[in-house]
Amino acid sequence: MSEERPRSKAFSTLRGRIFRDADPQYFPAAQHKGKTIRLCTDACLGAFFADPDVLCKVHRNSNKTTARIQKELKRLSE
Image 1 (cartoon, helix red, strand yellow):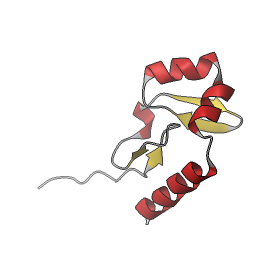
Image 2 (cartoon, one colour):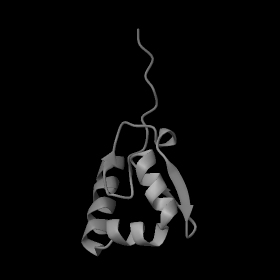
Image 3 (cartoon, helix red, strand yellow):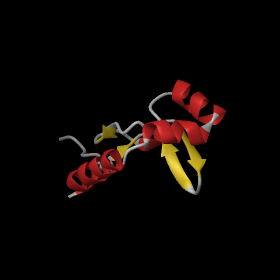
């Protein structure tokens, strides 16, 4: 008999990579303009701290990308 772990809610990192079965607490994170930003690696976190506005602009420069991520996250949470 195995115990089922509660399924983590899907989340995405700043780059747009979507994680379904990972625990977000194990990913590097920072606060930026009132939001929690998750990153894939500690190296990305270092780049974020060097210039958060530039890194956010580079990785979230498209409304299409943002819309795609939000749509996919909504689909995964249903």
